Image (cartoon, rainbow, N blue to C red):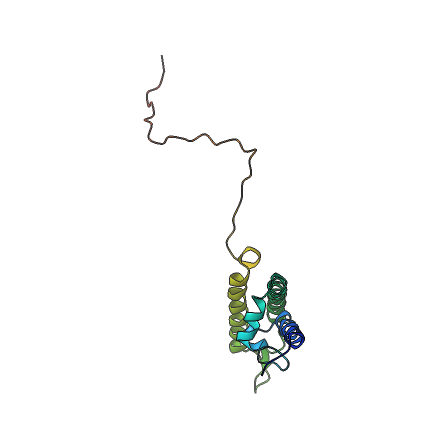
Length: 148
């Protein structure tokens, strides 16, 4: 089906809305009134504005996933149950499932935005543009002492 330019814009914005709300592009493109995946990426490439809008939507999606991690980690309602004898027991399957969900989302976030959500710590040292003095590690040291 061929869409007019205005219909494509509206469907593109609808797709971006779903991405901003946490859906992947693949899932967002399956929602009603959205572009198909191929047409969506073609539309992204049409202009710098579309590319910028897509980047902003992906950034919002990452923030949504981050909030989802906190929600999962704080959720405790099904971690404990009462067994048939009335004893309180921990449901380790639920705890492990929550851990897996958090770890999977952390992994995805680290790849979506490594500067913001990655584990790598990088330090940048800024100088006053003066060159560093190189140290020649191959120069033999004088091991004698001047004791008189």
